[in-house]
Length: 306
Image 1 (cartoon, rainbow, N blue to C red):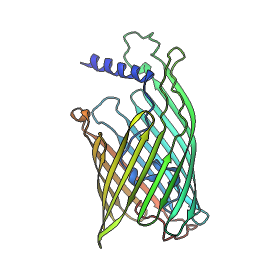
Image 2 (image 1 turned 90 degrees about the vertical axis):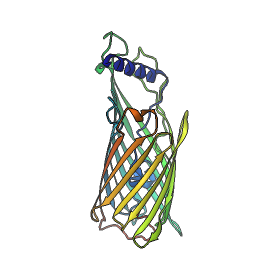
Image 3 (image 1 turned 180 degrees about the vertical axis):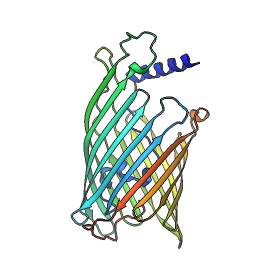
Image 4 (image 1 turned 135 degrees about the vertical axis):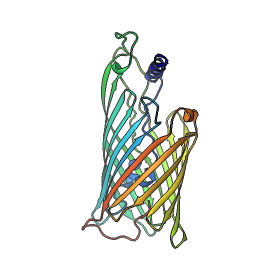
C-alpha cells in the first residue's frame, strides 16, 4: 500500500512539473489579518499590530500544506502613511517556500472614510528536494534538489470607515517560470492572483454585532472562487463565525479579545471536496499583539472591527 502511495505522489509531482501553476497558500483567518492579502491595509488600524498564523492543512495526509506567517504594520505622519512586513513559510510535500515582503500605504482622508493606496515588494525563495522521494531509479533526472529566488511586487486599494470596508489587490504581479533542472523542461509558472473583498458591521443590540464579509478570488487559468464569512461580535470580546469556501470547505472560526493588547484566533476547516473521507480537516491558529503608539493620532474614521 505504501508503494502505491509513493507512486501516486511521484505521478502528481511529475504532472506539476509540466502543467501546474504555483499556488499561493489558502487560509481562513484573513478576516482578522487584512495585511495578508492586501498591502493597502498597512497602518489602517492606526496602531502597531503584529500577527502570527500557523495552519496545518488536511490533517492525516502525508505531505499536506503547512503555512506559517508573521505580519506586522503600523502608521506614521498622523495616520497618512502605513508600513508593514509579511513573512511567510509555506511547505507542501517536497516543496518549501520562504517569502519576505514589505508594504507601504499612502492614505487619503475623505468625508466618510479613508482611502488607502498600497504597494508591496519583496521576494520568494523556493526549494524543491525531490531526492526525499523513494525513486525506483535514483539516477532519474527528476531526482534533484533545486532552489529558486524570485523578486516580485504587488498593489492594492482599501477604503474603510468604522462601518464598512471594500478593497482590491494584486499581491504578486510577476509570474516567473518554475525551474527545477536544466534537463527537465517545465511550463509551470507562478500564478497572478486578483482579490476583491468587502464587508460591514451592524448592531443587532447593545451587546451583539454582525460582521458579514466576502472575498472574491481570481487566478490566471483557474476557475473563479469565493469565500463568504459571517462573524458575530459579542460584547466586543468574542468573535464567533462561519465561512464557506466555494467547492472546498466550511469553516468555523473564532477570535477572543484577551485585553487591549492581545487576541487569539482559531479556525477549523471541514472539507466539502473529495478529500473529506481522507482527512480530519484543517486547523489554523492566530495570535495578535497590538498597542497604540504615543505618536498615533485618534481618528474616528479608522476601522475597529476589520
